[in-house]
Image 1 (cartoon, rainbow, N blue to C red):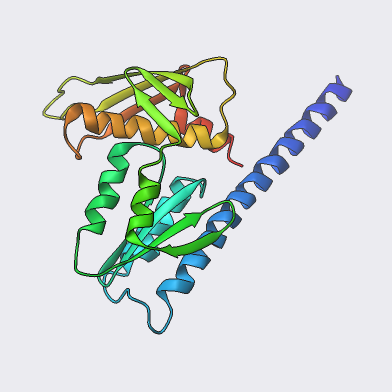
Image 2: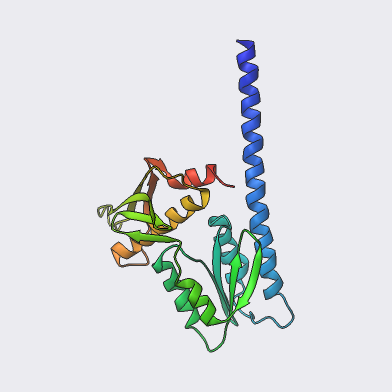
Length: 224
């Protein structure tokens, strides 16, 4: 019994160290990308002059929420910034398209989070990248690189005590290994599909599940 307890304690310690290392790696990646972006907005001749909260709060939070994975499109205007992950869902591109249509001038960037690079590009180049999708959403399916990786069911909760309906998204995995980046993408796709189905940007997502488990918890557990 004592040996079993010792092994159990060792296992717990090992798991705790592994979790801490993952959290540290994730935080370091977010910090590396954010610092590269900050080097642009804090230059003496930087375009960003007003509503800097867009960058210092919203862009940083978005990087953290998406675990600084994959590629991002970033638009910097005199009054604000807008950061969106690319290749996930057409509705997400609508946000970036709206940012590109605001104001007479802007700077456009492509961000490779894994490499930690931020590259200035033309608006045409950014739009070209926006047209490419790593993930493709169909009726009840999500595909990647021409292969179905998950089944998807989207429904809405009923009205309850004057509370409007919320989205309920349940994914079912197939015989395809899902990476951490895939899980992050599924969460974004699920929320985007809720907005598409409800025809409202204000509709929230009440439930996100993968094989009956909370998808956001799985993302946190498998952070790289």
